[in-house]
Image (cartoon, rainbow, N blue to C red; front, top):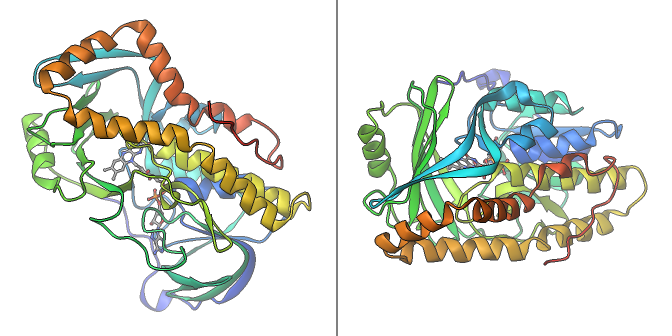
Length: 376
Ligand SMILES: Cc1cc2nc3c(=O)[nH]c(=O)nc-3n(C[C@H](O)[C@H](O)[C@H](O)COP(=O)(O)OP(=O)(O)OC[C@H]3O[C@@H](n4cnc5c(N)ncnc54)[C@H](O)[C@@H]3O)c2cc1C
């Protein structure tokens, strides 16, 4: 169990201050923004309701290239060259053209935080009025505000769409002790009608869970069942809503990155590398503003266009997410067997990685404005 290091009670002193950049949310997206602002000399404040790395927010699986590019390999736990896909009629082993790794959440967050230069405070964000963010410890006024708070999009303008009506999936996993050699997924309607189950080994722990693209479908019972079928303990639960549609990446002068902007990929629900990718992008835009090379409004519109230039890829993934559950299981088994071909896997996973490629980390000096991608 994570240790609750968050200050409570009388230790929570009032927090009323100004800053140049306020980053709300200290997970993947927020820490990536902070990383890019190191060296800017700006007064950067990062807030989260928990200590950095205290609450794991995912199964922590990512293309290994991202850990290398960010120089956070020390967090790596286990690496996989294959994805094992189970359906009721077949099991296929898909050899990936690049590897996937699981990592330790706390270590990765701490390593990323070390690459930034910012002040950190624990505070719960309640809302915003213009350039003032309201927290449970007081109001913070900032020159630039980033919402990296996850799917709730707390700092958006107006009412938020809430589940189950929002375009959200839901996921839940358990973290029993155990080990394994394979990164496995189950596309099996007996667990979830639209979605998939997974088991990601991470050194001496397994991360076993079920994700449903339909937010009305409850995933606790199938998660317990999948873990039980794998003879694993149902302990240490972790779950959340997962957005599966892009949202505006800027709104009312605020930058949104990661789940708050719907940057999690549909179909696979892979949202860590995209949160890092778009977080770095926000950091680059803000660095250019702080360095005097870009106006604040140009930075907002540049980042908004950059995010929107990925819409085509997200739409394709969403189409696949809607299609796969409709394919008859026998047909799906046949299709998966056909997809085992190396040429197909290299093509498909190559394109998939391109959506947020690790080369982006080193794609230019931290102050270079973004290149907007022209949709293919
Ligand atoms: C069960 C499950 C397993 C997953 N597994 C994977 C996986 O293996 N690989 C992958 O790529 N993706 C995975 N995902 C998706 C991935 O977790 C998210 O897309 C990713 O975490 C988004 O990162 P983020 O930084 O935008 O938001 P988050 O990681 O959700 O971080 C949001 C941060 O904001 C803080 N916060 C939230 N609200 C407030 C508030 N009001 N005040 C102050 N702080 C607040 C939180 O404490 C947190 O630190 C999984 C999701 C789920 C639910």
